[in-house]
Amino acid sequence: MVRRRQLLEQQLAAVLPPDPALVLVTDLDGTLLGGSRSWRQRVYGWLERSREQVLHVFCTGRDLASIARLLSEDADHGLVAPHLVIGDVGCTVACGQSLEPLPLAVEPIEARWQGKPERLLPLLAGVPGLSPQPLTADRRLAYYYDPDTFVPELVPVLEAHGVDCLFSDNRYLDVLPAGVNKGSTLLELLALLEVDRTRVVTAGDTLNDLAMFETGLAGVMVGNAEPALLEHAARLPQTYTAKAHGCEGIVEGLRHFGFGDLLTGL
Image 1: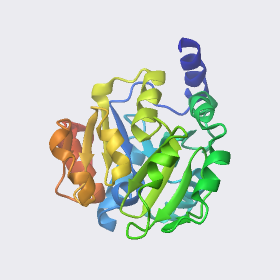
Image 2: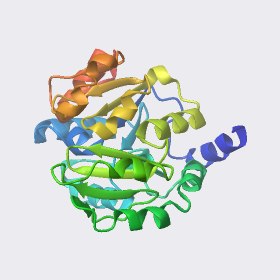
Image 3: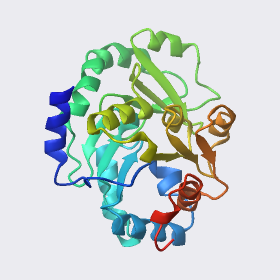
Image 4: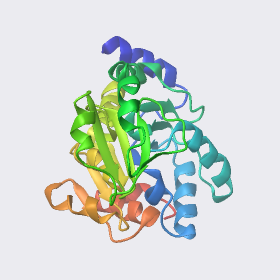
């Protein structure tokens, strides 16, 4: 572990702030990309100005190609690359600027995924209520699903092959290596970087963000969170339920957790 941490730190030494006051881990769709245009621009500008104080991590279901397109298309709104990316619902870890995967963080996940697609894809072919998502997913299988026609009895059949089935936003199904999710990958990354957990705040809006909130790290469910996620709020004492949506909700949560002094200009 020590050797892996040293190698990772060497790889990231030029791009990570040496002693961040805050590690902000944000989902994208509905969270960092949510809220009014005015609030998005304000938060994006603050993140750009605060790069030496705030270590920013995207933690998203998007794949790296989709993130690259987003950063290109949303440049006019001021969205800048984060320091780090956790993509593919926790199955990919990459440098934010280059979007190059970090082998030392990804290799253990890859090992869990070996041989899974060959066994799973025949079971998923032609299943009612499922259609593949048009993306290049790494170390997972990604589908749209119709809750009215999908057969839930398929789930234990799939999970018997060493995977987890994650449903979110009442339309997505991700088939992931067992035990791998946004929360588990985030904790592994924080441990590798020896980050002070009291400086970490997570933010999200759908069920695939639940694993982040279950880590016990400070968390913000933004005001537009899906009802199925909000149902879990009462059992998550370290998670704050914001009233405001998207970016404004993130800021509301940061103030709640005592990081208001960092929010210059907001």
